[in-house]
Length: 540
Image (cartoon, rainbow, N blue to C red; front, side):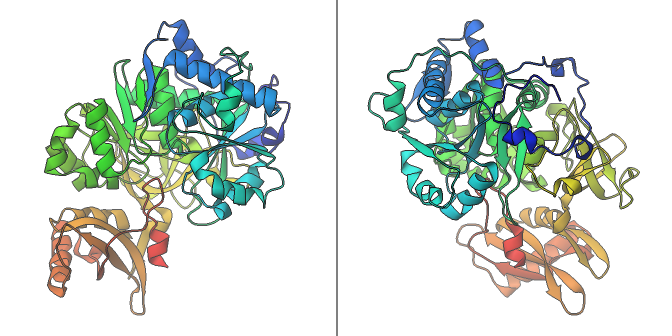
């Protein structure tokens, strides 16, 4: 690490894992040779004004359109509020709480420009969810959409560190807003950006916490720019005339990248949708003429109706991440839209996508290859690389890496310089990665290893199945069996005959021993806000 940190409050820096517990970093690409001083907000926003993009629309929503100059002016005013009124010291943590809207984006950029550390949170988190995040990150300040204040105020009662909360109005009308907007009125639209080090911490991103206490992942300024290089320049390759749209919250690193960092890096336009249900997202794609869409596979599947087909006419590229993309969903989307879906495998710990493919490099059934700047392999039980086509634990290294906030789980995530993502995969001789499931999604039944996602993909190919999830279920004879929870399409009703039909269909699609010996029809599946199936709830 460099010694020229701009952080006076060194809490987060002091909480970094020891160097020996961190993975090896790779900076092989010329574009990854970052200077020692780097403020990613300056790179994403201020530098676009210098490029003459001040009058171009940077960010838009149903109520608001801001040019790059307007976004910069508002981010600068908020940065002044943070420093002048709140007394922010560089390195302080600032919690952000809002749905995807321009004010949330401006707040994110403002914290970064001021040398603070962003702790963004999902809008639906309750007080009991917010409490461990606030306490673990020792958050002192919060900027919150006034519609979401109740749970945060309740959490504040339980958190001694959280001193001050400023509310803001999502309408982004600073002359008719709440506390934050009123204070912005008297602030200058210019701001002396803090000259942070490239390895100063800029973000503490918490995992969804669906299986236990949330883990805070620490990310540097250079990590954000590495994401823009490796995912943006090398994979998505957006142009300034592109219009981004998506559903992941900005608090989710997939959303941060696809709905803020990558569009601004490219000098493009981003569209923020506060309530991005599949119907709302489809409508917004048509309304704003979006060209690049990012969401989860379950959302794409729900969006695929003949009535929506014309709404996707403006789309050029679509990106799927947050959950494994089943092959039937990929094929159905391509048939409906003519677009080859970009499937991305990433992790909050690594900030964003590190394995993917696009255009002619896409192979059916494979997630893709390591992005330029990254390397990957598959490790066996002895922590050594396996030969091609053998299942094992996916290991990755590149310009980003896992850095847990004072968490002993760091010792399990990093092994021999590799980041172990928790994914079970195999690689072919050409380096393509074939996803088999999460480590805890592998089902062992009568001695056979069965991939839950593989069975799900087979079921999704059946005309009656809208969604499904496959888990292990206890069985006295076999130890565990494959059990499928199935959501049926439209008005189709479940029956014993349909169970048999689905079982026979799977037997004909994949190895017969993998078929679901138990099927339960349900109205919906439990998911996180980011669209991930919560299989542990089904197992429970």
